[in-house]
Image (cartoon, rainbow, N blue to C red; front, side):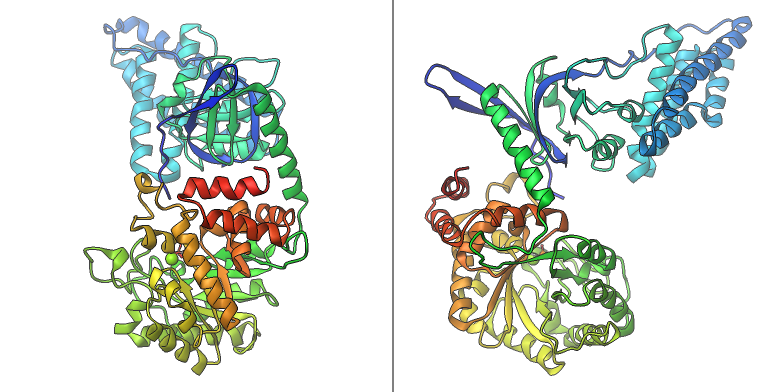
Length: 579
Ligand code: PEP
Ligand code: MG
């Protein structure tokens, strides 16, 4: 996962009359969609109580009874709301009621009150104990911490006679901002009045994210504290696909962007494939998968097949090498998801950011430049041969024939013509169609020679960018370099495509670049025949390609190749189609 850069960036937009400052706050994109509306902040949570003097012994029972009455009122109110909603919203409210009525929590409060604490401070302490336990458990449990804090705040507000904390009433559409949203608040959101949600904290699986997805309202989480600079009622543009919140945008410009995004979303929803330019140049649109489940999900989508099956992701926790039969079971599941369609299987790309315990035993000083991918098989050819046997067996098990034109096998991290030839022979011995990933600059430069041994190639733009720019793909501070729009990377794609056209060898792209609709047009213009990306990204790519003719794709490609940097390339290609 890439980290988010939360530093707000300020763009100066020049107008003939005035100069307006646009501030962009970045977070994690959760639900796509663009809206323009004033913001409203959630009502402040109560200040947490501090310890006071010990409560007199004869008042302690009453202190505890006041607590149970407050719990009853708060949970009763939430339960009543639960009755008016369905589905996940109802479950969320019921889960919050269950936390409020939790006996272990009440027992802790009771114990502290019996020892002389005020009921408010006892609630704070008991909740902090539970929060500590949940955080220690990590993962999904840690994301439930917001639920606990929400119950605490509601009960404390009730004990003080203060209004319930949470979402203020609005009667026109607003963007809701919060440090984090309580599940009970998000559960009752009215999507006609709260048109987007942005939170400082939270993760992709937090309740805020789950509910926003269910209501289909644009959502950005984890902006960090810079969000606090947005004043109550300030109009903002929220782009849930990019994960941005912008203030200071000209109203006409904002309205145009909202309309453009809505039109595009409609087109994407209606797009069913197959992918081709507006004048009929076909491009295969394929999915990147990692197991049977993701392959079946792809089969339900517009994907025509699978362009990258990352087999190493099946084995990330295996300490012993799975047998040929066990491997075949896993691979057959993926083949069965696409009985007719193309499936490109990649042999183990173990190492670097994806170490596989049974393969990568030794720590390396510099694993991205170390023994990863096909290089492992140089010292352990049997490992590769057993995997190829497993793939061949899976083809039989799933009713495909090994020689069938639509089952392809490729090696990762191929750097020399010798490696390409050696891998191709091992595949051809088993009747498998053989290819190589082009993800090392040396492979792009030598592609034409490699193609005399290979049946196809697929460009892995993630690693090709990393190695071309000498920039770690996991580093957020080097994100400006690890951008597939870097013209140097596009030149290597171009070199590979030219080799493909000379040798009549199919050239695909299976890195993240294929998920960018505008870059997909550039890649098509460069001569790429297939694009493979995460399933949810495919329809937007197909819809954009359908709007552009092939000559325009070539013009976009020429503009990007001619640029001096990634931003210029993006802008120059976009300008060809009026973006
Ligand atoms: C790539 O490098 O572009 C690629 C598709 O492989 P991975 O992301 O699995 O390294
Ligand atoms: Mg790679």
